[in-house]
Length: 315
Length: 254
Ligand SMILES: Cc1cc2nc3c(=O)[nH]c(=O)nc-3n(C[C@H](O)[C@H](O)[C@H](O)COP(=O)(O)OP(=O)(O)OC[C@H]3O[C@@H](n4cnc5c(N)ncnc54)[C@H](O)[C@@H]3O)c2cc1C
Image (cartoon, rainbow over all chains, first blue to last red; front, side, top):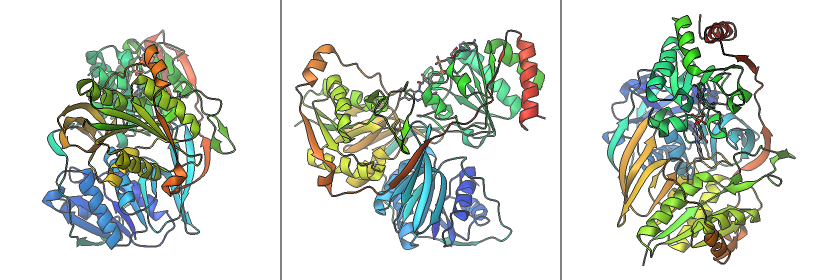
């Protein structure tokens, strides 16, 4: 079987789960597409999953109420073994990329990480992924009884639901006690669409000058466009925005239809998180700023003059 | 006996360098190569622990071609006590390299391992977790603050949508990122001293492993951009043009 570990939050499947399902449907390898739902109080999620998969496995346990990489890896490896999964698909989120290597080691399997394309033929899984700060596409092959794959967010189209719901099965798990003690958790709840799911991202850099101007211009424009808000490392380090909004090598990777970069210089580490965006618009007062090299549309000018005018015109 | 810390590093293209491809593979031979900044944060944290507890030993490890010696010399000049290079010319997947690093850690009786959260060559976030799993140790990824008391490590790190404060008993694997600390620079006397520090070579073949992935080819991918750059001195006119551009080129505004 193809085992997909569903990603979900607030009682709903994440977009990444739909994308993984499409990747599984297009893989070209036989076997039922199986969605595994891990968590506590996840019955509504399992119901949604049943419209995507051939079968749904549900582990609804108090021990799974909070994510821990070792617990997740153990759960997924156990199910993969018992179900003789030949392909295990895991989301390319921070957590997915953190526990998927553990699953691969447990299953003595190769890991294909953050793949953007994937096919199975002639006993071989062929996949592509980015390297060198997302400037290079590398093609790799694996031949093994089981392959563990994490799926790059935004690389596959989301699968459509089917009219008929698949069977759901409860599964038993033998879980380790977490060794890391979490003493505090701060989850950022944004009223906006999630950064990685957004069609439009408005991102700001140090060029905004202050947290106040940032809030006014970046949030203001995002409000008009129904967009998610992103930030550069410089901005999160300055404490203007939370780290969860950071885009780039040490932040999130986004691939929206439209990325607006306001007062962002375009350092290679930032570009690696957004250079696959379909359309890039940049506003920067320095015409030599590297961001213009990857912009479809650029305005050389002061964000404090131009952005309020855009917001006005969109109202 | 003091703590034994392993700082795992990679040698990568300098951020200013452009990528070159030859015969379908990335060719770094004519590019400037450096110790990955991502790995420097872990080295710095290790050295801070040694500053506080001088009996600590900090060992730098690299798995890769002979040229990685240079990055290890940099780590020695920054302050590592000794270095190990597991030499291989074969391109290796991250799980296999994790296996090698774990075996070295076992031989070295390491208590704590640092490595970069996502190195700039293979764009992988799997290295630390793979090492941790081979050793059956806990892992903390994307740390943003660390504090060691005895064998209890506390700190903060990034999660999917937010941050966590944590506490863990050593041994553990920690991955690092920009913002964790300000790495120190090698000083001239330390650069001189580094030349005399031990750098042990081992061959990858002696580990009896082989790559789990076959590397078929690499290609530079540049997305064609329209690059319509306009002057924005007249803010209102520039805004109007942009709004029209968005209307014509995207469906995000009506
Ligand atoms: C290992 C490592 C990992 C990193 N990871 C990341 C990452 O994940 N994400 C990330 O973003 N960075 C990352 N960085 C940092 C990166 O190198 C840059 O320092 C950072 O992206 C710069 O942010 P910035 O563009 O906001 O600031 P700056 O580079 O300072 O640019 C500000 C820009 O604003 C323009 N400007 C100023 N005033 C105005 C105005 N009034 N109107 C219009 N334009 C104006 C300036 O011309 C300038 O181009 C990383 C660095 C390292 C070493």
